[in-house]
Length: 194
Image (cartoon, rainbow, N blue to C red; front, top):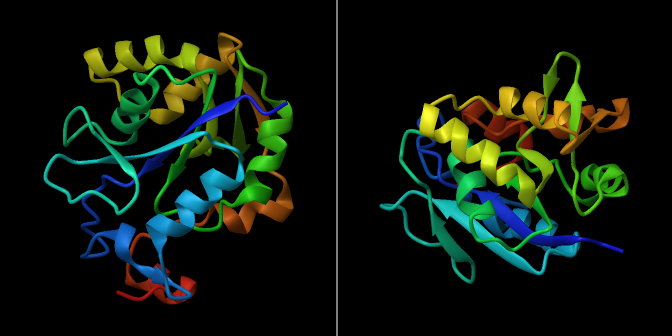
């Protein structure tokens, strides 16, 4: 049974290194936001929302949820999504991780339960921007935002210790999928176009 009820697309970054909104970059003629939303849909997410800044235009066909604050980073988008209360599980996916498709999420879904999400550890670091979070992570996210301790790495560590995240080693076959699309050089590697 798939307990995934919500897909949260992190698409609210300022894209300063890229110089343009990454969400509208084209890969194989398709806007990146649509590619990522399709991935979330393929996982069985009943509802897909896009976390955006208040001054960013909405993405066509996606429900927009405003970030709490322009300077809170990805934790703000996760928090805003979990506040919707759509539990039990939410898939979080960053706009700039185009390699994190259904194959990326399959082992995470297999390890998750309604009360426990799943995240990869890639060497010494987590891959928190393409992971599954339980609704129970809302309290930890809210506390961290209130304290302005915004590290997603620290959040994953805390949730893992609390039994709210299964931690899986990132399989070697999926390591190339962790690559980000941050600047013009990355854009060339992915074949992304304005």
